[in-house]
Image (cartoon, rainbow over all chains, first blue to last red; front, side, top):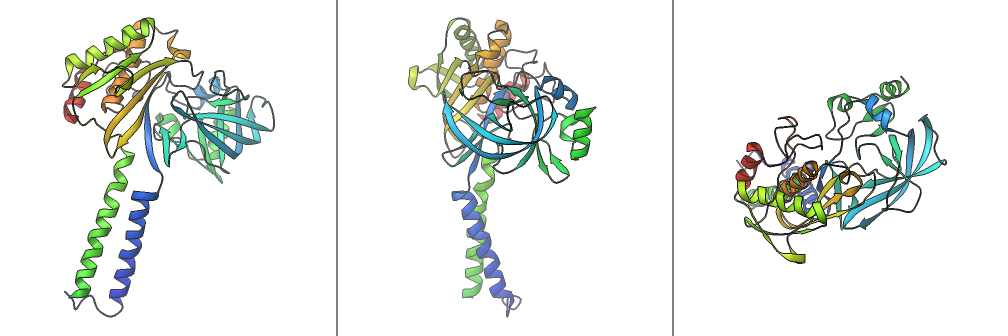
Length: 183
Length: 170
Ligand SMILES: [Zn+2]
């Protein structure tokens, strides 16, 4: 056994295990953990067409910054989003506010159906509705279906939200998504 | 020999450090005992439906929800959160590892005020299911489980599947 762990192999193995140990300790004790909130939703959207019908505004935009607070014990996050292109409707301004349930509190990601709130400085295609309610006084939008109308954009690819219907979960190309929106 | 011991020791530490990291992403939480205190801190028909939902879980599963007042483990409240696209939400506000210490349920009256009593009961019973430790079950369709994820569910009490779920946990 010892004969096989000789020469250069030994320091490499120690280095490799050491790196894994640091990673493990980081993820177990320091990395933000995820706590999913158990929701009941009024409606599950089956495709882009359905999301579209419910949206006042559809845009592609970039998140600038965000703020998380608790309202009646529930974490909410308000993100400022710079509107890049307008795909449907008319935004109230060039930078809009989007209210989401969840966010980072006490070192944990509070998620809805394992969907985290939007990340800072990230592009998204968003299906939005004007927010009506007491959680914020600031003029803002909410995402259609809480998390269902939110697609993360990386170049020409989109990542659909977690735990959505087949008609949305299969979308991967931004062109396809935009074609479906403009159809 | 020393070298081998160090390698093995490191390997054990590595295993130990990574193991708990993956447990958190699961909805695999439960109470330490089947006797759990609750409070329906609501009004009118909401209180009635919350009590009905609580009685359902008590009747059909080993879980025994007992009245605990304002310091209860599971508290259910109704309030208006606006059009945020959820009618009910269960927040595990205190957990220790995989053990639930406190679960706060919010019912969003923006939606549920226009629901029938039965649909309201469906949302509350569903949220109580989360608070006990159940996740969603959509594969059986609208009528298969009270843990069906949306308010199109056609059952408002725990089904055989929901009950089997609770039995598997406790
Ligand atoms: Zn749920």
